[in-house]
Amino acid sequence: MKRQGINPLVASPVQALPATTPTPTPSADPPLRVGVIGYGYWGPNLVRNFADVPDAQVWAVSDTRPELLAQAHARYPAITVTTDSGALIHDPAIDAVVIMTPVSTHFELAMEALRADKHVLVAKPIATSAEQAGQLIDEAERRHLVLMVDHTFIYTGAVRRIKELVDSGTLGRLYYYDSVRVNLGLFQRDVNVLWDLAVHDLSIMDYVLGEQPCAVAATGAAHVQGKPVNMAYLTCFFENELLAHHHVNWLAPVKVRRTLVCGDRQMIVYDDLEPSEKVKVYDKGITLTSRPEGVYESLIGYRTGDMWAPKLSLTEGLRAEAQDFLECIRTGRRPISDGESGLRVVRILEAACESLKRRGQPVELSMPAAHQAVAV
Image (cartoon, rainbow, N blue to C red; front, side, top):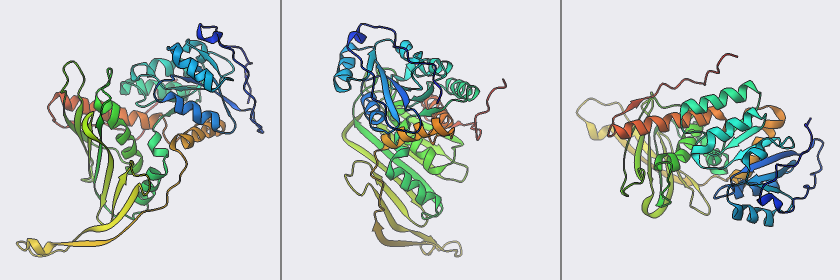
């Protein structure tokens, strides 16, 4: 892979810490050098996984908080640290930029990185509006760069197995999709609970169902004065009468991470908090028999069968995501969680917030199969 050369990052107060050159990983191709912006809650997990993935090097980490950079440098002495994200983005030694910062900064940082000809992996949601997401997609396509969104759950063994079961027809015709993601805190300052928690479940739903809703409706409430909506109920309507319902809450006494997918043949319960058997498949359901009107009880039969737990891949979702990102850079393949998937999720979130303002009135979604890139 051709590089422009190896230049040090622009000096910053934190960069006075000694930075040594990482030891190259043996490979037929030079290792891809990754810069990570944001070393707060989620950033350290990305740094850890990219540091462990073969054929990749975490070259630099940027954050506005020197104390966090000191922690990063103490754990990874070979990594350059800086408070200047622009210096990291424009460092010619870096091939790809990972952005793990607050939502309000995603668009500006991702666009700057793309215009610097860097491949980009950005935290979810991809941007604060569908318009911004579309601009990022267009820029990446113009420059033939990989744009990927950190929809981590779709890289887990549990969610991948659920999709296999749905796609194979094991569940039969789908009736409903129901998810609950609640906990106590953390109240966010820049986004409401839909943008903070529902984004996870919407990305899973988008991947598992492979369909796009035609309308959404949402209700919610803000129980803390001056803070955004902290609990919400979001319903997605599909053309085939499938309903998807999502409950998210920052003000719950217990932590729940549970999804139900119901078909006319079998049903799935996915509990992400289960240490084992996160996915359980139930051979339960109803059978409908065509009978004359007026004999309601005889129309519905109930079927109860066995429960089984499929074997799941134990590979950490973030590691699989990091590997997919690197492979897409090397091969030009489109990632599973590409910019389009991020755009679809943001469109639903925007419509949901509009429905919140209308006290739950459904909002129609004009959702094309794919984003149309602007002519160049």
